[in-house]
Every structure is written in C-alpha cells, then in structure tokens.
Image 1 (spheres, rainbow, N blue to C red):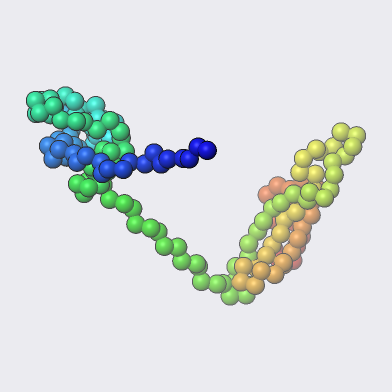
Image 2: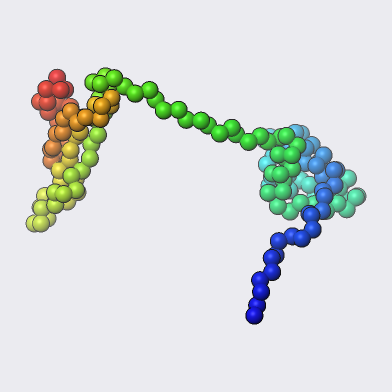
Length: 158
C-alpha cells in the first residue's frame, strides 16, 4: 500500500565557490584578529561570514563543521593518521620471564555473620612462566600486601 521512497539526494551537491576554499585556507594558515591558535572548524565557521569578499559576492556559506573538515582535507591542511601496525613481541625462552597476577577467589563466600571481610575474602597470587604459560606457583592468602606476597616463603621467590 505505502511504498518507501529514498530521501537520498538525486542530483549532485552544488559546487562550492573557490573563493570559500581560499578563505578557509587563509583563516587556517593566518588566524584572524590575533587568534593565538590554529583555528578549527568551529572558529572557521565563525570567521567566514565576517569576510568582506564573501559578503560582496553573496556566496553560499557552509553551515556544518563536517563540510569545513572536508575542505581542510581537500586543501591538504589535514592528513589522516597512518594506521598503526602492531607486531607481536618475540616469545620468551622458558623460565626467562615470570609474570605475576593477583586475583580474587570468587568461589569463597564471605562470612555470613557479617563480622569478617565482605570483599576480597581470599586472594590468589599466581606466578606464570611467560615462555611456556606454565603455572609456577599459586599463593592463597586472606590478607595480601607487598610484604606477604613477595616474601611468602615460596622457594621460587628466594
């Protein structure tokens, strides 16, 4: 019964006056009125209607910061950042590097009387070999801090 019709533009967008592009470039490269920074799209939109040449020609001015971004890219005043290519670290040799991880034991429930700790009831300190991912040591304690974690009497730590 009702057929949808596309609201997309059916004709190409009207071309912008080259004077507007020159004005955008001038505002970006030589900030007006003693502006002590490089003007961005909002500042450029603020200064464009103040240009006398544009007022005399009665040019259609951009209203969107997105349009100004497009102008800046077209003029070569902005460049896209290159995509950063991540490379994995080379694997470690066995027992060359040890990783330490503290975590809560979620299977231990708090004391129902409400007198003891309600969170972090039991904590686990795992020591894992980075080269082989083997668990070297797992220390379980109810009150970990720097002194108890690293001097727990574990032969691997001494």
